[in-house]
Length: 379
Image 1 (tube, rainbow, N blue to C red):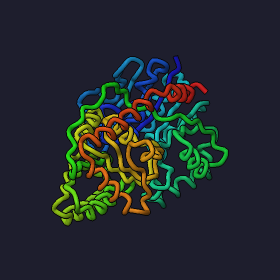
Image 2 (image 1 turned 180 degrees about the vertical axis):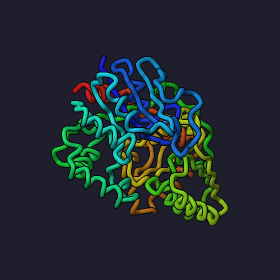
Image 3 (image 1 turned 30 degrees about the vertical axis):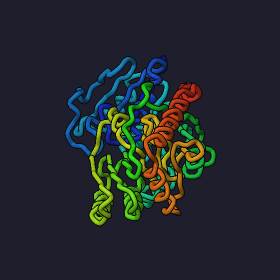
Image 4 (image 1 turned 90 degrees about the vertical axis):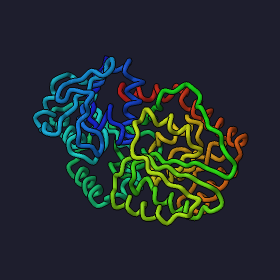
């Protein structure tokens, strides 16, 4: 059985890092019978300073068959430790998550190159997309320029989940970059959702994402400011990544019309998201870019249609009856979509909800995705 050594800033029992951590956890869940995983990560969750209580730091924890995690404590981030972890076994693959970070991205790559590991895979998780690069662009583009100069990515493989991410990698890393495409694996779910009643003229909306410019919650609130014909509740779930941006959101919330009720819920554990989504009518996510969008798929699994931007892999949603994917350049279309779903009565909405769940089931049942992920480590 091949041994995979992976470096990632956050892993179970963390959940606040959103789609990146969920993508890797799902992948491990599907592949743990085919590969043995050794995962190096922090002993704290995203935005937190208190360590996890469920683990033992600074040693290997076996959390599932063939899944071992080394939780590095805050005071033990040392080059010598990471070098030792890379050398203590004959690993078949070094699997590094993300690009912009020292301890779990840049350093493992440098050390793996020095040790001359032959198979290094980097999962960029969409950070090379236009929306993601638009946040702190000078720092990120300067880093990518430096990496090109020192040719540190030479000989590595990049994991892309879809065609447009492949194009981003080729554009920013280099046209000769070796890329393996493997779609992200969804959460394992089989039970149909339990839906609540939908009332005509009312709508419950939800966004599940970290609060940051690329997730575009401020845009969503600006749209709601023009929705005056229906009673709408909007819950925002996720950690605050950008305080200044969140302050802008809060200022706008104070001025919304009386028919709009906004509630900030903070973060919730990832294993509870599906259950939470079943209590809402529609997911609203006008993101500036996603390479996958796990909360979008989980919305479908919960029988919850979506109103999203057209900057994700999820396309032609109106045709499939599962929602809307709309250009951010035409905000009026988002308002029209919200009004459309608000007007639906219970029977009409039940049809849309059923289509969303059926769409998710068909996606999850696709055996090609599992084969692609196995090939990622075997090719």
